[in-house]
Image (cartoon, rainbow, N blue to C red):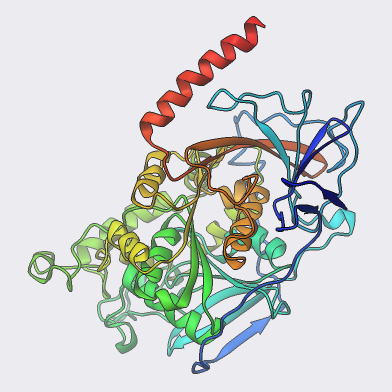
Length: 533
């Protein structure tokens, strides 16, 4: 469908239709686009890779978080009535608008766009596609589970999708602490239809835990070591584990080698929580391997002990910093701590905190986390991670390097995150004023799993903007001109037959705290005027 109009807009039967792909001709073209740019790297050394079609995401038998732990005594969100993804917004003068596979479109009008944004102006509703729905014969991209040998005894688990999309950009997803590639299943299935997508498990997490005991017992008859759950608690480390520390520096190296040896071309890196820190760290050290970074509620700090390279004298004060074998005092402490944090009720409580919408189905996430805690190396790996030193670069220093090297960064944050609160995202925004900042509400610490429809939509739009060198507007913007302050949109999508809606606020290059306060005051006057009229 093409509407010819000078400014890519046209009032048509009471509806405003806006294209996010406005070409120079002024035509509004609603279609799927796949004209991607791609840069190649020289060939890299190939390492051993084992892939399988086996589905490892079936869950851990014996537990269901939805009816045992997570949903108990929770106030679940109320659902909406079922409706079609396009025809759900009904009015006397409405008309069905078709879109491509992932292109969004905006529907406005007096009846449909009546909400008020934070700046006191009317919000425009944006209807976006949902996730692939197998019940409607819309299958997602198949996911392959693979292992890659980083070096002897260090096997990295990863999942991939969309490898047949050879002319499309590559995306690499980095998980947060305590989870793994399984946390990005909704991105692999959806984005894998259009891109080549990878998600990895950091060493020491997920399915990238050791296949052998890094510290076999040196004492016969040690009953504690005799239990399968006690890997890593021996008195002497194996040669391959003598310098092993699950730290930021190790994970940064892991990502670099993975991109060089498996993906073998520059990538768009997406990181949530801890994965966001690693993504920025990796981009700061290897800008030639990165096309852009998206931060999903990235944690701005990691590690408590000083880095031995950055602060060698200070590091010598601490007798142990995450290496193997673990000191006897740490082993005793770990027995108490691990029993508590690995308990199913503790895991359920953490998920309850980080998901703002308690109606979100987290059964798979819960079961996979629980499954990981049952691995015999999980407890000692956890101790190594918690006592590992800080990285050679702080989060702020890594951001500065990215800015100096011109690495594009996009910020997408869940507003209701109880840990990495919006103030941390806005702090990054102040350091990188030109970086697009999207704040989603309601959404918590893991927006990619809680509102994957929105995160996937924003990712697609941002990548299209970069690949087109700015000729395609950023998501939620009406044209290619940047918004200096902020705009808010109600974003709607259909999930399992029900209409859902969240608010997404875009902050521009001149957004400030004072501007936010002014917008809030203005919005209050706007609401009073609306009520009085």
